[in-house]
Length: 445
Image (tube, rainbow, N blue to C red; front, side, top):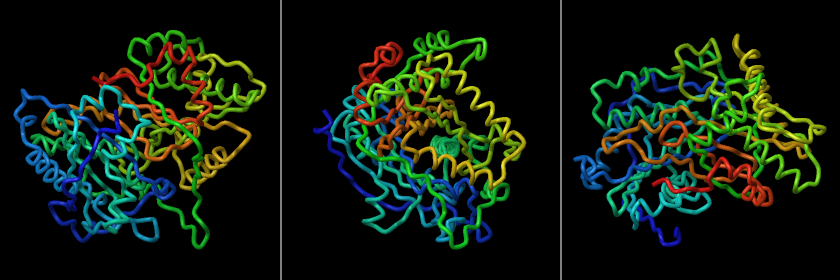
């Protein structure tokens, strides 16, 4: 299917903020969370099928491209660090209106061809959003934000982004996308989505560390022969899984907890099957700390504000059920909240980074890292041609034992992107318990 799909780049340009950034805002400090975040880019794709009953949907590709560029320019005047460059000291952004890359592309097929079988293992998601390394090498731009508008034969459009993780987590990315969409839509009141003009509040609360001449720590996620698969848990299956997972310890498990517990159970079984013994296992869940920290008033801090709770199984624990694993996940999160409920220091953030790096690097323990974008309202992003029918986080780099959870469009189901070693994935794909609750790469349409 995907071998026939061709994406032709029509034009590429730089979009700058509609209003010059004032001199007193020309430097924006990074927080210690930003400082310790890996130098990677975060991809995102939003798919908008054609809706011929709507005037804006009938607009030509050129008209819609113009709308996207104009509204992006205005949005960048609010999110002015996104149009800047990271200083060589890695603790601040020069808000110099350097701009963002905008690519307009034409896709030689209807969108339905992709949505009918949206396999993450295929190459098409990669070419529907701008490749940051390719563009930097070609143009030397070093843009923190890259956007690609893909126009399909049927009139549908997919908006693809690549944005530096140094300046965003899922919360900030969602805030940016919805601000951009509200401005494009011409919303009368964008106050609820457009942030205050001044950035840098997080850096004043959590200032960066001074490493002097010593190397800054980094988390070296394992990249080996891996494969990524997309699983979807619909609302009814999640309800059944919640019922199965409920216990006296956790009578009302969340949907993220039950889906995570089932996946954890299945990947542990796969690992044991391929190694002939039960290895200790660790589940690291990345956590939005805005709802935990007293230093994060009103949840409005932008940038990165992510910690990680940890749940563990021991080598002597041979068998696990979903109930026991949900209890471990809940216990790990509650301990995390207790530990940081009165605040976190920059030294604490540094220590978290060190501990996660050690866990990921251990060869005698299976460490799984999970990130959940559930409940972030990406599906509310309406640029004027309706809300997206599908949101995707393409696999640009396959990192072993990485799990990503996002909402499906109804806000109840969950889509999982699971990356494992080839031999572990082969067992997962035939795991009957997994298949009883999740569908492997179902159609979006």
